[in-house]
Structure formats: structure tokens, C-alpha cells
Image 1 (cartoon, rainbow, N blue to C red):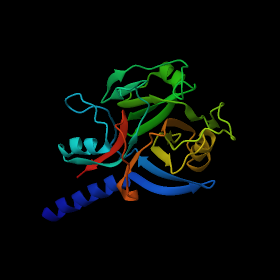
Image 2: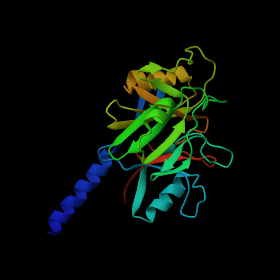
Image 3: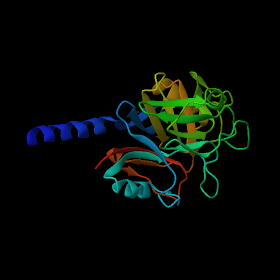
Image 4: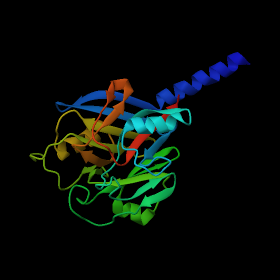
Length: 244
């Protein structure tokens, strides 16, 4: 009986380890860190506030909160743009509860460079959905964060991206496979253009839909890669949760 329980525990740990694969990749001469979540086993969540309603702000604060339920982060990243009080700019859903509404139209800055989109997480499925399509479908997301612009829409790059743009930042984003079974998160090592970053998702990671999460504030927590990026406090964060 004890041997059987030990085997089950090892199998569970193996399943959790397989739920995320973080690796360094080089594409077109630029270096990126990529973390891939298998939605069949991944416990992928969004985080904004602690139990008292205070902003978490840092990966370490999320980890400390999870420790109370015997869990920890295996991977995390900033997950969308936010106001000065670190409230989400667009739609934000956590544990099925809508905290901020969908912003349907164009606006200032990168967020308003339509088409923008929504990362929608449901049990066993992750989707990047263009905002107008999201408003039409209204899927029942367990977690969702709106950001922008879209990087890749149905296999095509955002129409406003220029190959020779002089706008370069360290950028991070997320793409999902056509079946919604895998979510791939990427962050550049150096400053890159939107066009180059979008090509990574379309041509190397093979995700037909991808969403920009942010630039310059982009941060990654990936112990397998020796990454635990520090900086000023964040708004929404996405993380993959495993047992201690």
C-alpha cells in the first residue's frame, strides 16, 4: 500500500513537471525564452489581488500566497496592461468572476491598436481570441485577460506591423495552438520590433493566434531557466501552479 501511494505521488509530480516546458530559443538571430503549457495537465491561472484585496504585484507574493495551499509557481509572467493603480486596462476574469469589463473599441497606445484580443483559459483549453470575436462568442472563461495588439490573427500578422520599424522593446506575449491544447508564452532577451516578435509566434512556435502582453515592463519567472526577474510591481500575472 505504501509503495503504491509512493508511486502515485511520483506519477503526479511527473505530470506536473510535464505541464510546463521552459526553454531558450533563437529565431532569426534573436534570443527568446519560451514556456509551453500543456493544457491537458496544466493548472494555469491569472493573479491580481491577495485574499485581502491588495495587489500582489510580484511573483514572490504569488508564490507566498500559494504556499498556504501547499502549492507553488512553476512558471509566471506579467499578463496584460494596467493603470497606475495596477488595475487591468481591459477585460479581466479570475476564478469565473469578472473584475474589469471588456473594452471593445480602438484607443490610445498599444492596447488600443486594434485588433487586440483576449487570453481565455478554461479547464483543458487556452485560446487567444480577437476582441470582436470574443464579444460575439462570449465564451465562459475561468480566467481571462485582455491586451493588445494581437500579434497573429488567424495565421496573419497584425496589419499595422512594419518590418523596418524603429520601435524596439523587450516584449512578451502568448500564443495558442489551433486546438487550444497548448499555450506558449515568450519573452525576448533584447529589444525587438512587433513584426519580429509576431513572426516568432507564427513561423517558429506555429501558433495561429497570438497576443501581445506588454513591453519594457516584461518579466519572467522560470526556475528551470534560472529566471526570477525583478522590478517594480506588476498588475495581472499569469502562472502555472504545481504542488509543493
